[in-house]
Length: 136
Image (cartoon, rainbow, N blue to C red):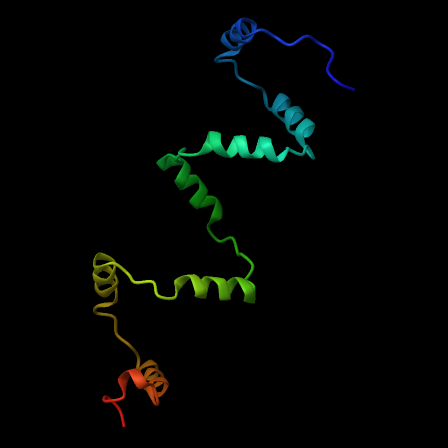
């Protein structure tokens, strides 16, 4: 059934807003609101407007820590073959900046490889045309 009350004026909306500002909502009320909104579908126009309203909003440092903590240890499904192909395609021809290359270099410097790993790398390079002059 549609709501039958008259639309409120902006002045009335402001009065209600002022009166409710600072009021805490109980957990019980939050649950009722949550249940009432379950299964509610938004129109494409409404979704677009929400997106526009949220554009430019950034999470605070505390929020980012909270999100990070919540995601720690959560396993995700492996990417599908199609998704992996798309990622591969988007990265082709991509070049890291000088700064990024330097940071990667620093991160990798000093790492010791086991003899087994060195042998695997060596074997994988056999027949590689990029190092044709290095190995016979």
